[in-house]
Image 1 (cartoon, helix red, strand yellow):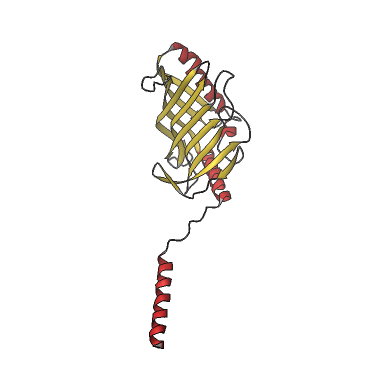
Image 2 (tube, rainbow, N blue to C red):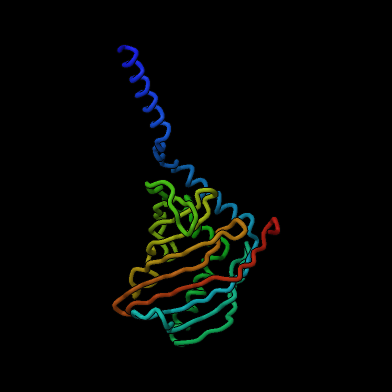
Length: 240
């Protein structure tokens, strides 16, 4: 009888050990500081190694609730050189002359200014420009990639600086997506601007693929601007 009880006890212990071995390990929250360092490193690597690039950008403006027929469109060739900035060459344009003149042309002028040396560094998603907080939840899936999500708040206010969330690749810290609102309205007549930008990994560096900005004001009503990026050609130190 004692042998029987002893055998039963051993069996229960063995089963318990096997169940513990088979149980999934508790999910551990990644180290916030390490993730932020990887984001900074990815931005630094892109800045150091991408000497220049060209791409084609298609910009479209939609008014009101209609996002099927743009009120104005423009296609431009974007040429970027490190230490110089961006230059835009208009390939084609159509639609409202007013929106082209007072909407898309000022947007390109603003992008040109933002990307000038001494300015561009202030727009980077780094811990020097943003307060970053890793969101709970561990690894997420976005566009088929493993990523971490971080809340971001700029240390300064500007129309191109965003209060919101960034998603970064768990392996190398490269940007996958940005979503939020502008920390400062671009003009007194515009309402709060919601901005989103999606990135792809091209030759190891994050490059914008699609962007969307939406604003609504009593004066202008609802306006949506989208940008689609294509035909990237990168010039890098390694020649990739």
